[in-house]
Length: 66
Image (tube, rainbow, N blue to C red; front, side, top):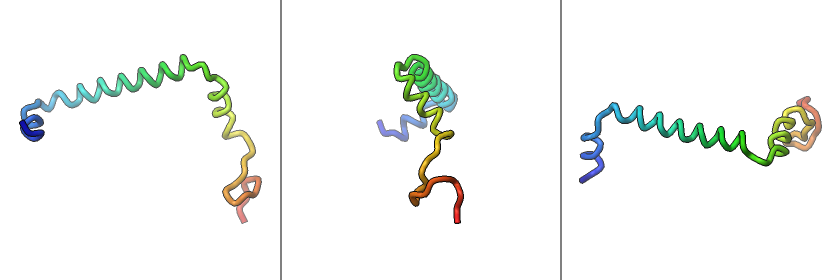
């Protein structure tokens, strides 16, 4: 049985259901990882990153461009 025969035999209504199940599984895994992760310091560091002073690509500090 080829892949085209298999796909033509499937009903189109199955695809949204499969996509929903995949989405729910990924959402549950990500939620579980965020809520029950023991590495809180990593999340706190990532939350502070936008507020920290950083070095530009060319090595200068600050946000002004010439």
